[in-house]
Length: 212
Length: 212
Image 1: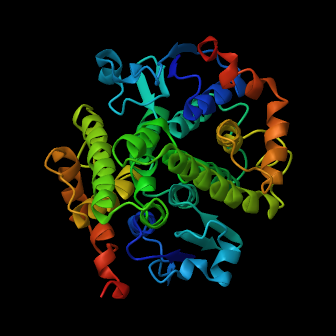
Image 2: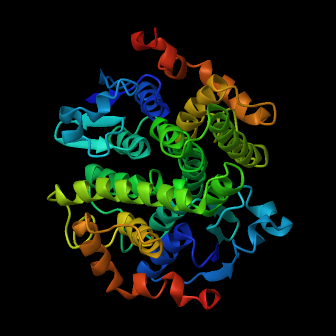
């Protein structure tokens, strides 16, 4: 397998974590978003959305981080990243989507660029926008984690799941952008549990040479 | 089962379609977003994100439209909304996420309100923002549909899937906001195929009394 990724892209980081949790080797092919490498013809030809991550598994070419992780979970079931019955799996997916659909899309690079270049937002307003969605969005996750007996060491139970693969990159972004995190103690406890595992720490953005 | 929904919320419409495709009855409980009913204490107590849709199935309380549809597909497998092998299921999920993660989150009501009230965008700029993400986002979907032999009468093959449950509400929004759609003929062909089915037409926003 090969994974087109960008070291700082949190959607790429989600997939790197999932691969590591499953002990799968994939060749990492960097696509440098700040240098606009995603717009190059060769990449655009295989990635119509011009977004990373993109997984290549023989003839299968797959965009979208959550779809990729579900694919890895179906093709390499152990350890499961979506364990339990239908209700448990739904809770895990909903937590992942609370971040992947409600927070992250508002703050990715192309959106921030559009806000500044086309909507003429100031740097201050752009940062306020960023922090607003992270802080209110993580508050929603906090409420779900803190109020449910299904929360364990990790977002769901005592093994990492799809939800943790999404939570950790989101918190990394929040820290990098100096978002407030004092109001989400359960999120931060789970984050710390995850970061104590090599699958999360060895795949973090700062682990890649491009980050230098 | 009960579904908290808003007639015009496209995420709610996705779930109404899935229920109809599976022939499942759910009591529909309206939450009027324009009247801010999602902020009422009683609803916020069961829905930390204060978003619709929210599915109640006995003791299971489930937010997030795609997680709900996967749950319905696991608990009521026939007809399958995620048919085929792992690669097929991944393609369907990725198409759904191309819309549910890349287009819709940028254009939902709370985001548009924030742009106008907090970021002080003009009505014109807000509409330009809306159309930009719909038009460029659907172009990505078009490329994936038009370039793949897996596309059939519907987004994937000849039966409706999760991807169609997301595509149809997205196109409804696009039409309502006068977005350009001439550049996405395959998307529109699939939309027309879907709307010829009662599961899609009988659950559309205009079918509800609140829309009057």
